[in-house]
Length: 188
Image (cartoon, rainbow, N blue to C red; front, side, top):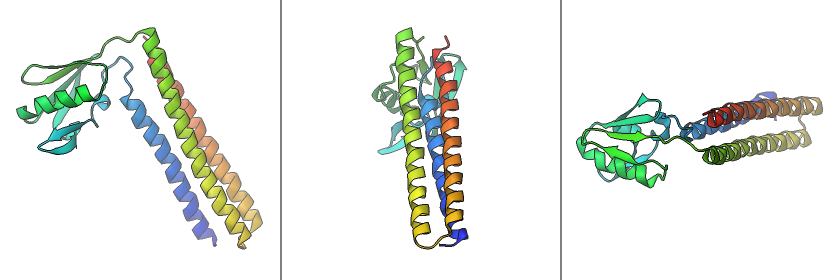
């Protein structure tokens, strides 16, 4: 294995680790903190003439105030399917259909509910760390095999150090993202 091929493996590993971070941030966007955010419903699937379609593709989603989401479908016939998809998502909210738009009023969170949500956020961040460590293990195995097959041992050690540094950096970012989200969840 030559250096160019090894660099490709390293780039692939970094991309996978970055993907874990992106996924975590998307999941955190869906977690309600008592504030309305379009990310809460953007990816909910709505039955659009028999096809499951993300809500963002059949409506305009906006925030009218800190606790109210307004979903304006592009076709009035989509009001009922939008309402149904919100109910099925089991978000703990009741959509209000006025014949023009669907409103969702986000209830204030109790202390107990905030702790539950923070716990869920911690679990999601741990899953992201596991994902990063799995990528680390994969690339370390590739490096060890390459060294066994004749790749320079010094370069192998250098690559392993780079992988560990990359892993530490991504793990630190995950912790940082979690701390921000936890603060957001626990702030009334």
